[in-house]
Image (tube, rainbow, N blue to C red; front, side):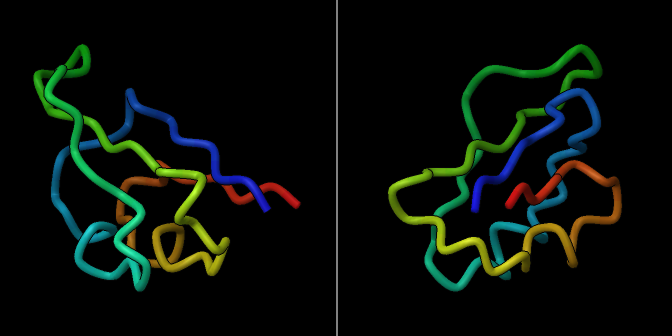
Length: 65
């Protein structure tokens, strides 16, 4: 599975980071067009569990099969 991130929707809330069981998500230092630091998914650590998708209130994540 692959996870797509829509960076323009991220509001830096950190819920996805807190709920990722493999610590595969982190905040980048750059900000998006709204002034928020955006998330990055480390594909080498991601297991495609979907917790980021389920916990994100802003629809940042899309899980691809």
